[in-house]
Amino acid sequence: MPLDVKKLMNTLLSHQRAVAAQPKIISIVKTLADRPIVHLKPCPSAENRPMPPQVNAASNM
Image (cartoon, rainbow, N blue to C red; front, side, top):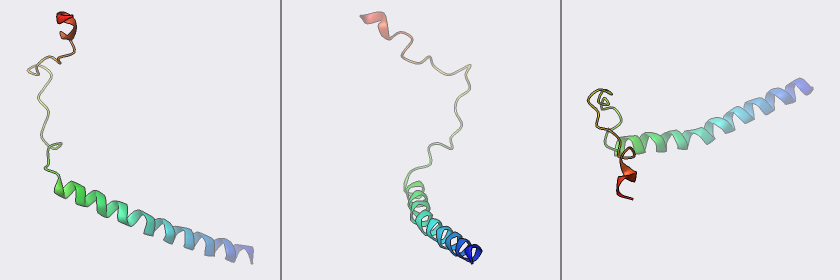
């Protein structure tokens, strides 16, 4: 009998996990669809990328 109880608990837990994961996935897809696709643009290569402003931030102190 304990094996049957374990099986029942596992099925209940997996069903609960699936139900809990569904709205999150839907909201993630919705936010990705609403957001403009910026993160898919290729970054400029390191050679022609301008220097970050942190390098000369202390020059005016």
